[in-house]
Image 1 (cartoon, rainbow, N blue to C red):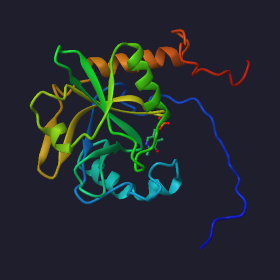
Image 2: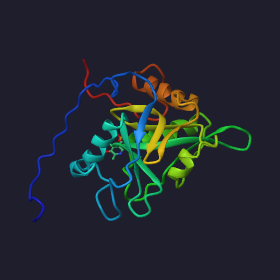
Image 3: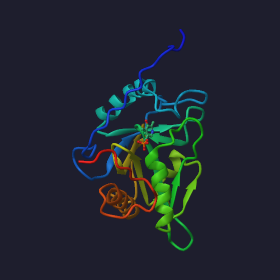
Image 4: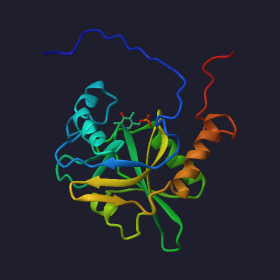
Length: 212
Ligand SMILES: *Cc1c(COP(=O)(O)O)cnc(C)c1O
């Protein structure tokens, strides 16, 4: 085995509709007890085709359980939330005054630094919503103690997708009321408005790729 001497790097660009055919609704996710997506020292942080092969068995399990996607935990302790499907993960908690705070796992080498993740952190900050990058445990997410008020996942193809419930071996935990949250929906709408040119792009994200 050795790397190739030469590569063809091909980029296919295409308009997409919403990734989930049902439109904008909260998805159910499956947290597999014995699968991992990425391990320390591996290629999990890269947009590498090989990463997807190892995720397909867990994905089939998710579908068999009536879930849409897989919630991935860390490889070492199987305790800390890393990603969701091929997307990044966020949740919303409240500060002492009741204001929303976004939380997302810190980039650790096993998490892909998604473009959408970066955009949402910037966008939220511009809307006055701070983001904390910190460890988020499965336990925190499924505690049902009201501290996590929203959870969502994000990526280029899927945009922002609310997470309604997490199913594990021990059952199904609904997040808050199981419906798309206020902060989630606002971030999704603001991002879409910039992408569609309905809102001025203050961030320098938009580029003209062809002139009709
Ligand atoms: C593509 C991808 C993401 C999201 O990246 P974007 O740049 O926002 O599309 C997150 N995690 C994984 C594993 C991915 O493959």
